[in-house]
Amino acid sequence: MITSRYIARRTIYAIITAFVAIIINFLLPRIIPGNPAAVILFANYHYLPVGKVKLLESEFGLQGSLLYQFERYMIELFHGNLGISFSNYPATVTQLIESHLPWTLYLLGVSTLISSVLGVFLGRLIGWRAGSKSESAVSSIFIGLTSLPYFWLAIIFLLLFAFDIPIFPLGGTYSIGAVPGFSLTYLENIVDHSLLPIITIVLTTAPAFALTMRSTMINQNKEDYLLMAKAKGIPQRIIEKQYAAKNAILPVTTHIVLAFGYIVAGAFFVEVVFSYQGIGYLLYTAVTSYDYPVVDGVFLMITITVIIANFIADLLYAYLDPRIELR
Image 1 (cartoon, rainbow, N blue to C red):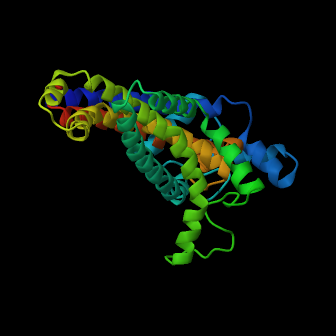
Image 2 (cartoon, rainbow, N blue to C red; image 1 turned 120 degrees about the horizontal axis):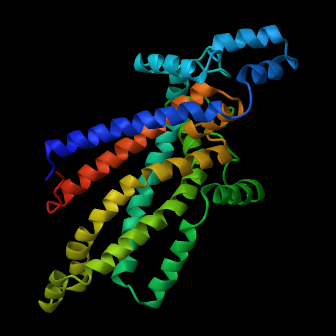
Image 3 (cartoon, rainbow, N blue to C red; image 1 turned 180 degrees about the horizontal axis):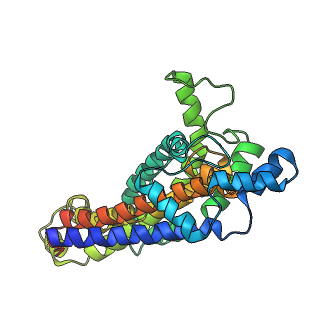
């Protein structure tokens, strides 16, 4: 049961969280030592004329106090303007995000779908067989995989399967000579370049879902209704699928939604390693070039996504389990 009072309260909390995150997102790039105007001028002309630095600072809105800059940023933000990229001038931040976001959505969508389905299936199998030697071995492997950093596994796979054994491309979203379009050749090229990043993300996220499903299956196995079903002589296969798995999947569902933020962060590291032209790679290039508007825009998008995911997780759990009351 979900009351309107609860939704209103959670909405207010979400707005406050978003505002605090906007402040932090604005301050973090600007407290890093360095001057974007000086970096861009030196990269293009290899010297720093004072007049041009001041002019470029004025064009970028970097003059004045941080409070003044923040006021201007908030005014533009309320008008739906995320600013103009410093390093990709005159492209706007919105245009850059729109051009890179589809690649990240594809990578995250496919990876999360495979990870969740595979994790739930494997977790159900090992959870129902808890205590056996095979379950202990598989669980140990899963614990080891969940502890692996995304970027470390991505580097290992890149060196092994793209450099030493050239099974997959070295990086990028598609080959340099590929012609974008809806042709089968182009689509195959996209899939070929995304396979190794997807495998990397799946191997580091699916085990976590499997371990969560395993824990809930073990807890469900101790419930009275399962003991009653076993006493009635119902086949173990039916009890596992129709009774235990259905109830055990509830907390796993919310765990998948809540873990979305961690998956996004991990996917960003993977994109950088494989030079995959998604939002993560855009953020990396923006940070290295002191492109404040792009950093702010990407962080804002991530923040709102995580806040919405947490809100949906709360509502989804109450919807799936009628025993939960959110007042």
